[in-house]
Image (cartoon, rainbow, N blue to C red; front, side):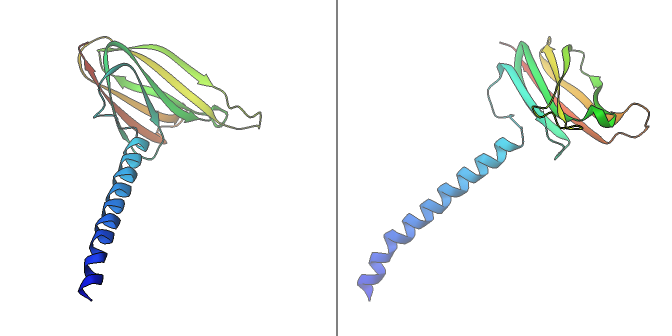
Amino acid sequence: NSAKAIDMVPLRISSMATLLLMAAVLMNAEGSRGQDVQAAAPTSQATVQIDQQKTDYHTNVLKDGTVRIEMDSTPSTGYMWVIKSMGSGLEKKSSDFVPPSTQMPGAGGKQVFVLDAKSVGTQIVELAYRRSWEKEDAYQAKVEIDVKAP
């Protein structure tokens, strides 16, 4: 009996190591879906995808770099994304709508804001998904951008 117990110990350790490795991989995959790149080193370009699953987003970028904010949008319903406020260290470079790849009527596309990071420091962008004739926003999001010196 004691020989069987000794033989099982390596199997238990191996199984535990496999479970821990799987948990680490799953946790890393979950973190990457949330678009929170806080731990990533700043680069000259950053992209934030607003998925309407949460309201707060975060990214890092180098000074004089660009931040691309992408959101699903369906302007045929009257809804559009607007920048409600933006940190003074940011400058809006462009605002575009990328139509859907399908020609189905009413299909949504992507709305994209490209911002230039002009000043070092924390910059906040507040966004709203709304119809221009309605008082209430359908959805709000906040993007915190840490602009770092190169």
